[in-house]
Image (cartoon, rainbow, N blue to C red; front, side):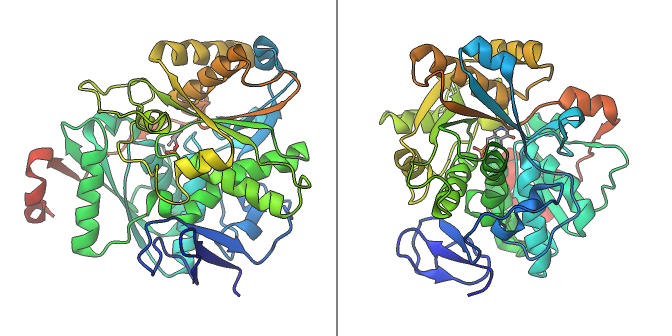
Length: 408
Ligand SMILES: *Cc1c(COP(=O)(O)O)cnc(C)c1O
């Protein structure tokens, strides 16, 4: 056995090397199984302190990493005695130095490192903004060319701290589109026709295990697993990853047979595909699908496949929340006033879901609660660096997607 294998969660087949689909044709996710079974974080000041449980052989040069600390003021407001945040944004005072301010930085670094180790020098992804920004930034340190497709309405998110070289990024926008299903369709087409390696989304194990470092960092800092884990989800990848990391820690007898943390996953109404599916209700995309936390607006999240969001919620005795724009904005404001940092809209959705849970008695005062602040400190990041928006190299018309070959 190498340092890891990927196990199909449907048929149990083992795969060597990084791949996103079971060779037996199963639709299930593949999960990494590491040779190293014990939890042995190192002193490395980034997420690579958990190299044993990342599908990479070597550490990469990066400042990306989660930071876990108590948030007493917000906790007191909620009536919680042991409330902690996992902060994956930019907040130097707390040691949080994610270069583009969200937990997408935790996905980009291990993904690009694993690609380089496989000799892959080009990667393609579609994104509503935060993923693209994280990969575009990370690309510079990895000598990997990153092709990004984003909806035009999200172009304003494609800023990078100046000084960042942009020679390794190619940006295409889909004109007149505001959610990213068109961008996904276009990127799939480009990948298929031109053989550019697709990043893989939720199927990308490097991405999931990178996000899983949030749970690992919590365990390292707290000395145990939290009872509850709160996060806002679009694809649900972060939630799946948190649960997988908890299982890995439990496998190390971290908590002697105690159950994994309960997952509390939230979405921004009216964009509620996962929330409705979990409740067993149908969901139609709303005509006006603009929501406060637009990064959460994913139309096709991996809900029902083996190892997906439904399995993860069941296995963690989890639950889901629907949060309105107003609730999210109010929670974000309150968090910011009490803790002194701005929240990315998706993180504000998660904070609002925590307020709901505290009010409904879903969590007890003495329980250890972890809020994944998936993005924050963007005001600070923009103050510390001058940021500039990337110029698109190509603009596609959503209605003439099929004709893109002539333009490329
Ligand atoms: C992408 C993103 C999410 C949602 O993550 P998924 O893994 O897609 O569920 C939450 N918060 C922020 C800030 C994000 O960028």
